[in-house]
Length: 111
Image 1 (cartoon, rainbow, N blue to C red):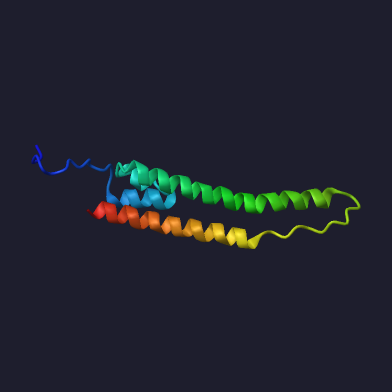
Image 2 (image 1 turned 135 degrees about the vertical axis):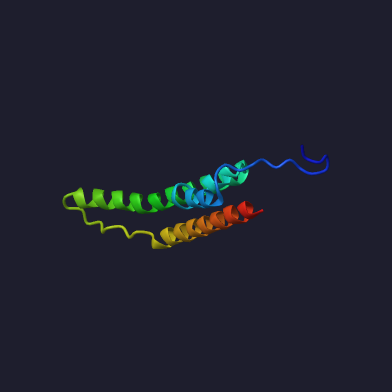
């Protein structure tokens, strides 16, 4: 039984290696979920998926527009340029969140 003045700490599920592996290769935030840290896990999962969806939209919407232009016979409109600045911003934000997620899992697991 813990001493009355010490906080009760929930035991995380799995080893630190498993937590880092799942956060790195399955879904950012999965390691936090295994550590029973629900809010950081939801934060990393939702923000990383948001970056992923943002990048997909930055690529897919101009691609669909280009497809429509290519299929219109006699269209004088030129192909739309892919917005590389938006893609780069999404990639850099996603990479930063990914690395912060791994560092957070590692630091919390070492405590």
